[in-house]
Image (cartoon, rainbow, N blue to C red; front, top):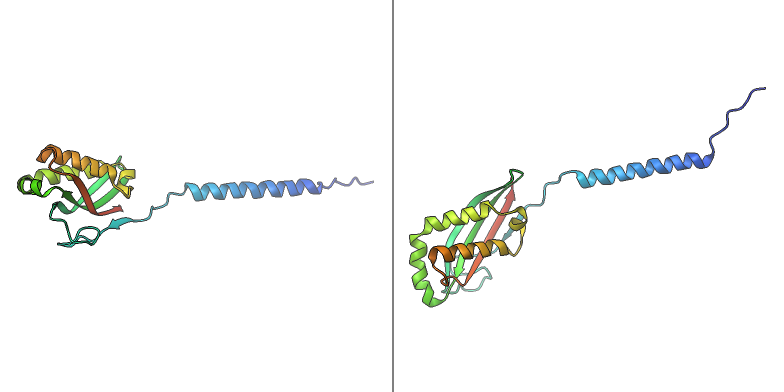
Length: 165
């Protein structure tokens, strides 16, 4: 008599299918999460045209342009290359504006160099920060060092566009 081969039990076949489905699902999840994706273009700007500040109200006579439409390349460990275009304004008191304006005009190149250095050495997280607190703090401390302490009350950054290259 011929011996019949034992048939695999049905629950073993179902278990194999379940394990195969589970392995495929985990593989797809890992594939989707580990594929490097290009982050969305970061852009936040505010209109600042001549006599208007970044809120669209008439500009305060105490806001002084420090640098406008400055473009800087930020290379963080040669992995995250970004180009940042920005403008910086200083808010000051009316009494300090008369003494701050000639200093800014006289030392414009030094100030622009510091602005470039600040943006070029930022971490990617600081470039993407919507409030730009790190940038504002560093700019204010550098302006205080260049122009004199107490002349600048607050730093305004009405335009900040960051693009990944």
